[in-house]
Length: 88
Image (cartoon, rainbow, N blue to C red):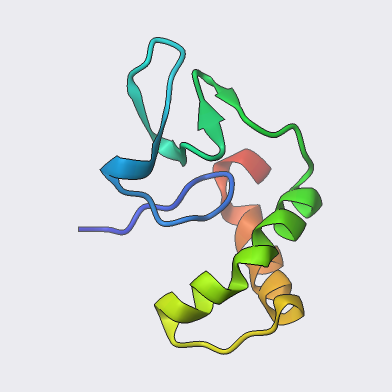
């Protein structure tokens, strides 16, 4: 099975963290932290989202075995985010 990622923040997606549409149904493109009740939870630019997500570098490192600094992780996100639906 192919791993899905939130098309706003890049977080790995699973049933437990799917966002919700306006009608309350699950949205399998965005996580609950980015998309709730059919709307984005944060009105921000891609750079602002990268800054926000970079604070979770410890989780990325823990899940991947990497040892990125926050600045190194921002570089990773700058390469990944332009491929996400919200930022294309």
